[in-house]
Amino acid sequence: MVVPKREVALITNPAAGRGRSAGARDAAVNRLRSLGVRVRSLEGRDQVGATDVARAAVADGVDALVVCGGDGMVNVGLQAVAGTGTPLGIVPAGTGNDTARALGIPRDDPPAAADLVARGSIRIVDLAVTGGRYYSTVFAAGFDALVSERANRMHRLRGRARYHLATLVELRRVAPRSYTLDLDGRVVRTDAVLVAVGNGPSFGGGLRIAEGARLDDGMLDVVVIAPMSRAELVRAYPRLLDGSHTSLPQYTHHRARRVTVAAPGIVAYADGERFGPLPTTIEAAPGALAVLAPGGAA
Image (cartoon, one colour):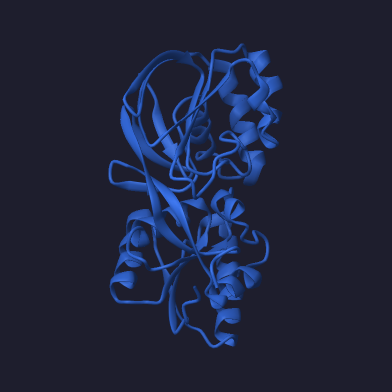
């Protein structure tokens, strides 16, 4: 369906993408206003403040909430709109932009992303939820989480380069951990270097760890990588770029609607944001997000 856009709230993290979001915001606001859309341009100083601002705008009845930034800002938007019916628009301006990538939203063209908002075509997709907090891409709970933790401290790089370097640094101390997974009541105990729970296929700027995951199938894709040597991990890493790691003998894939992940010493990440230590339970939230994206019903 197409929802007329009388007024949207556009919220920006001015620090996203090393300041790129300010330019993207201005380009998107100008395009929206030229198309007759009224825009409330808002900012959040940090994630908590941005979430409060976003929730207030949705409660005030805007026709759509638009986030300008990276996957962290998308995550802010999810907390405000999930389950409300208020559609989310995305103007990518961050480091990874994996949610936009999965949805087919232009990642380097803010006016084109704004055109999707003005057009008003809504696509209904799934989210995942853990501890009352939603995510749209991948829950990282192993070596991938350690890389995210390291990458978030690397402020001088962006995009894939940031994750590549963080991976090389963390490889020096990679070690398998013992995991207990509960997959819709089926318990699996295994040693692994990486566990990921995907709602979407990629994280880290296009690393397709959960290759084959779909945003509209009501399921979570659980990827387990069995212990590998440092040399094997170095050789396997480039295969995440095209999803060909799925042919590795250490790769195992499960699908479930509800997943509990437990392991010592892991702080999990999702949408590039710190979610907290394991154990945690993740559930699929089918149809929880209305998003302004290509392929939406018109």
